Length: 221
Image (cartoon, rainbow, N blue to C red; front, side):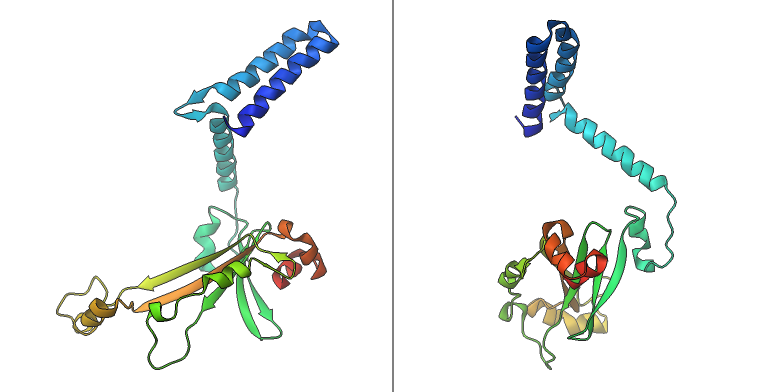
């Protein structure tokens, strides 16, 4: 039995107990309310509690109402416009670190802020194989909480493009050149690795306030 089901049963029992102690005339209305709560707690449909179906229905109605609201893509990156049809509060930002003098791309909707960092290899004539220099996931775990700043999550996102392209015929020059290399090393033509650090200001409000509060404080955190 799930937590919300236990809570409903306990509330139903508490209502009946209150009616019994205070005034027995209240037993009838309290009994009706308690019966509804018990039904919500025990009834199931298609293997799931009825209360979960009600919550899912209300959430869907809310999304449908939000989708019908007009939204403007003015001042928004055109590449993000299709995403705004699902979540119109999303916005992109660029924060410039004064010490390192480089920009950091960010995305958020007012309740969270995610910084996107591109992992770049060393500038060498020949790059080492992926297995020779793996990404240190332990560093991401250590970055979840630093100097009072507590992150909600840290994710690794990787985008690759195969070489040669699957649409090329076997006799194409690119396919004949890259085919043996791909068969031997499995090296893609393009491999981009991003680290997404998600900050929920509610997890570390003191750290955000110490850095100015609001969006600026969250960006500096």
